[in-house]
Image (cartoon, rainbow, N blue to C red; front, side):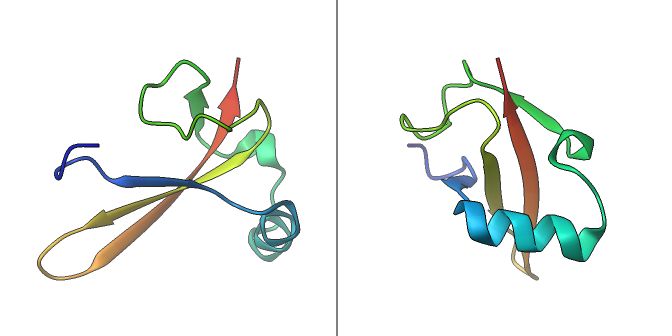
Amino acid sequence: MHVLQPKHSIVEPEKAKKLLEELNISSMQLPKIKKSDSYLPKEANVGDVIKIERKTPEAKIIFYRVVIP
């Protein structure tokens, strides 16, 4: 993993469900990330919610994506 690449991690199913309820959306309404993306964790499966953490000098920014085939 390169130092400039944001950290990608799988969100636990219970936490993902809670997050989606808070946002009042379904997982398919999240932005998509392909299963073939080289920075995804090896154990990521289609339908998993991925948390992407990007750090800037001012803040830590968090994005969520859903894995598609």
